[in-house]
Length: 90
Image (tube, rainbow, N blue to C red; front, side, top):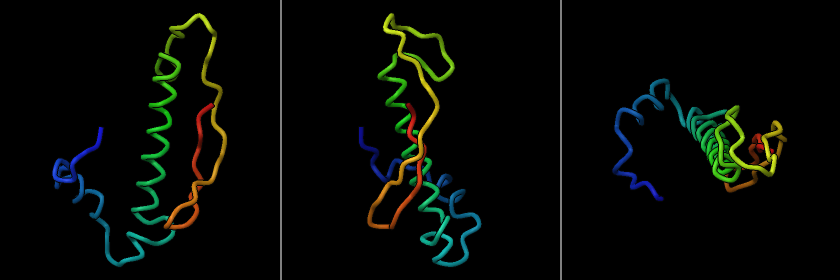
């Protein structure tokens, strides 16, 4: 499901930009865009794992296969804005 940018509340944007002072705060190393990309990717991967396993993290195993979560591994996401280390659930 795609989110229409018009559906993102202005309050959320205001909160993200609360300490914004210069372009590096947004685009630089550890800037808002990098932090947001990292958190969104990791959250999406966790949601995908929850769907695949059929239970929440630390939740009761709902399948007979015995598949469970087993921590995370470090990977590097490479894109237009450079490299970004993320935690991939296993």
